[in-house]
Image 1 (tube, rainbow, N blue to C red):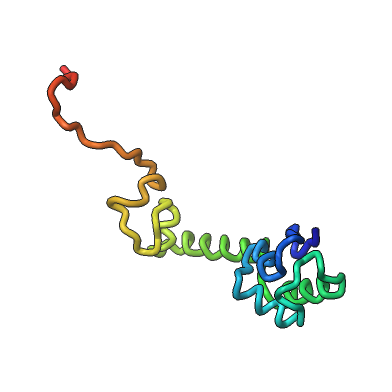
Image 2: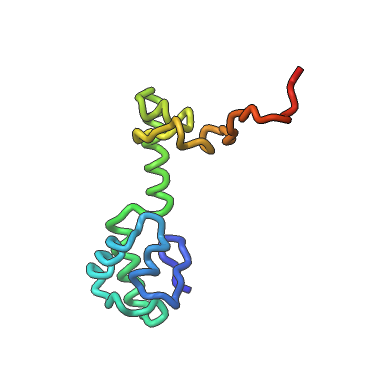
Length: 129
């Protein structure tokens, strides 16, 4: 199992798909990485030589923010929004959606509301006296 950016990459899958196991690398970016490293996209990870793996590592480490560095940057950005008390920061503090989603009917689990229906008033229901 090759290791790139601290992540074990599955070797039985094609290189394009295997690289998406790295946080911050999606299908489109994995194709760009393989093009820059001049590696065949259809090869499986187990078929790659150490030289090709080294090229892929160089491209990822030298060009893109992935894994811990990317997670840290995202967390710092959210912390900055919270610190300056902008609208998005306040939404993050309250653990509410901050991209304009509806909160009246959705995001119940995030808000901690358990879905309860109103009493139907049916006959035979126990009264609270």
